[in-house]
Length: 403
Image: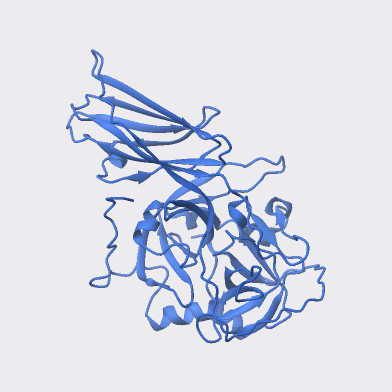
């Protein structure tokens, strides 16, 4: 497992004076993932496949939504039980690039499934089958359209966030950013966005208000390397599925969720150490300490906030006593679930709240990582070991009757 080791590095920060007030007695504004678009019902009729003399059949379906930044297709394969049958389902973008191809074993899931995100406003779906049965088909139910990238929240003065590519030659920052991912969510018939980061080979941390159930985990895509290159383009993005949600690994009060991601991406992209208790014992964080946040604000390509970015007050009451610290770092909706690091590259916070005009809190907030680690320790949870299910707490929401 690639694991990030903390070491000191020099920062040159331009820090402006600021004053952030808060009333710890005020309740928090309800937290929610950043809405980025809509889910549209399509309900494409099932089309019977007609095989040629060699027993091969081909079907395709295309969809466009002008102005979309990405599209996702919800589909269900049917009639794939034949012993001699073979099949593949492919998704293509507007340039003709293959985004994902699913084989027969991946297609033999008797439920609705959301595809990977296809960048742009056009998607082509192709279905190739050998020896199809009389009922073999692909049902297209819905399309998710991401067409909103604005979220005018949580900027203090000018927007000081920077493209992460500007730090490619900074070894520590570049290593810290690699495990940070963009999360594409489906919630309440809307598309939404958050940020998350790998803490072990297969386990990712984000906010509970981003992923609240096994159903939302099933519908989520995790994107690594979603950032601009030196040429201003999006590079090679890796998409993975969320495959495990366990209530034991979540807290609404501390607003965290640890979920399992397919394919052990932490082994490829690295992990962020959760050794916060040792870190706080060695260098206790305090108000005025510089920090940085690596994030996907508004679902945009990865950015970093480090200029004029510091802890304002620690501790402050959140949804639990002394659970939070306030900070002056620029964030947007979609930054929820982002890691907050101190100047030594040690994880100290989980960003979960950005102030808004008329909101209950008047500053940006992060959960203290030491509080999360302490709660997991009290529960006997190890992040490198997926816990056994608690009786009665199983996935529970796998039924997709009207998802």
